[in-house]
Length: 115
Length: 115
Image 1 (cartoon, each protein chain N blue to C red):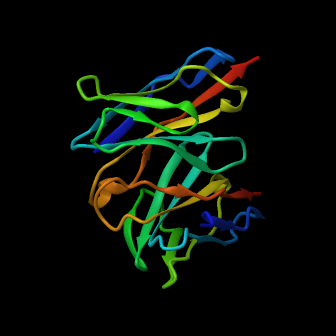
Image 2: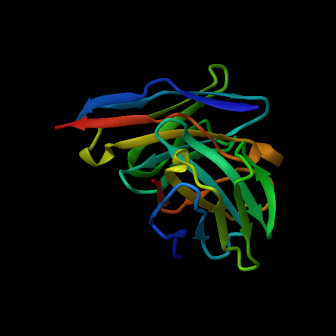
Image 3: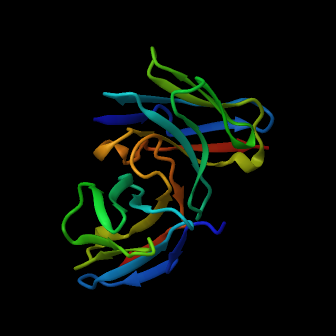
């Protein structure tokens, strides 16, 4: 079984300040982890993925995430927020085979960027 | 490459009717998954098709069904619509045949409203 908990349903930051979106996961095997972003009335876009290589993963638009097995966490960060980062972010876990291959989504974190 | 396309983008139906949604995956992708997104339940996995066979299924009633054609295009059908079926239905495609990270690329979704 696998699950994801996004610890904050809403995060608000000022433009130019750091972003931290928190995610904890649970998985009975070595998981693959993803962060997706969804802008209003749009589909989901992949930001980055962890696949058991480097624990610090760099993604698009300046985002990165660090896989910490001891803490079962995969937090998403960005050094400096832009107005265009305002969106909903989903942490996602997936196994490698069988029914575990389906994506299991967290409940989402709505990011607001204030001018 | 063209992305995942979904038709129609918006649909309004009444209770008791049935509906068919269509998804065309990225060229070369053979796996298609469907998800339902609602404000209350978030993003939930419906089913996955690979090479015209349903490979995984989520916890949805039998009113939800799907199929995949030889060109990898997929359709999902919902019969006897209920008000609670109002949602954004997302389709995702993947080139991954069976193991390893299951990175998926999402379409813009079909917004279904049941009156």
